[in-house]
Image 1 (cartoon, rainbow, N blue to C red):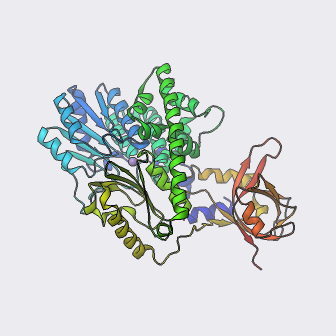
Image 2 (cartoon, rainbow, N blue to C red):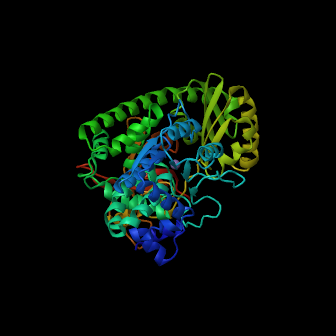
Image 3 (tube, protein in one colour):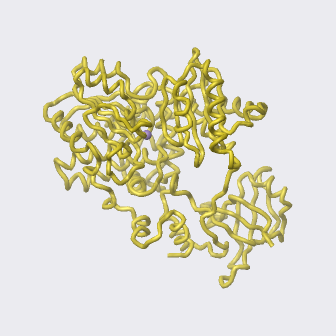
Length: 560
Ligand SMILES: [Mn+2]
């Protein structure tokens, strides 16, 4: 193994041969036994009874990628065993996040006796009480954290590695992965061999999409799910997925599906349904066997996603104007930006954009009819859920985790919320400058970049949250030809590195810097300058300039 790869593994906390081997070769055998999860035996037994008796089962999901794919997995498993399952995914704008008592009441009146939540329910105390009063059996499957006092809703069973007393080794599964665990446990009782050989690999496709989209760390079991699921996505798949690939101009036959494809091309289209309209159509898309219907639904997702982008761009422009003009706001450690009637389907994305631009935790609030709906995103080392929990008396509803939160409250309390959150953030963040820090994972002189190394680095995939793309540092690289500015913003450099014995420079290395032209001009970089460069390795597939090159992540004049 090249030294650079070993360094990257160590930087990821992988320090022995066994762990390195497991990391570089994700394998089904690395998945944990579902029965290790607290409550699994009770949940499986109740589901088996329901299927045997032909009971109506209601699956209650969340409206995002994680929630909808979780519904698809459980619905498919139940139907494979001869049962029937209906589902409900709340309308984001009309019903809002989480379990609703009114839906439980209607389902009960309609003959449902068993309800299974996916990706939601961990704090649904009142609704669990409603279920109990109605005589509805409730199984909660969720990955969100339990309430601050560790209490859990009164359900028949709760599947959540994060609940108190659950010994399941992987704590960071997404909701769909927990649904996958339940589905597999159920199917293994009927036919363990077929389940492991056929069904599990096929189910990994959906679980991988959710794992990547929900931004859980791609380590441990999540890495296995993402890596093997992506591999499965390359093979011919169901009509829904095929239609979605076509709509997103992805051709799995000609090019490997990457984590990037899932995060930036598939997930936004799947999420567009829940953001702009009803998420239940996503479930229909993945469950239908009718190609015509699948194409129709995929085309609709495409349109919704375009609409979403336009709405987002308009609101983002308004936010940027505010950030540029309002000094009181930009002086805050935690940004709360509110606007009238901003589409609630996009406030979470907007919060992410503000975090990207400012490196501060940010909450975007949409005010409608006197009610403020907020969605927040955070930065490393700032626990946003704990922050908003300090204001729990202001909210009519709130939830989330360290990096993302959502809430509703009377708009009249917004000034108080801003005041308290900023004070809280001041205490927590005071010692640190809110500057973007560039993490360098390993030093690698440019003349050590080889196709063999690039091949080894590909074994780190899928990259993403918790398993970032490697950023390397090369010291004292020489700009060998005059820098070329492209489209006024970008820059191309040709670099030579021969100051790193014993490997001699084999030629020039091309570097491209997206949006780096201005910075390079400021630094007065020119032919002959010596620079320290932080970079990512890129494979350029251009027919003329193809081959390995580097993308600038940071640059400074070389230290003497
Ligand atoms: Mn989730």
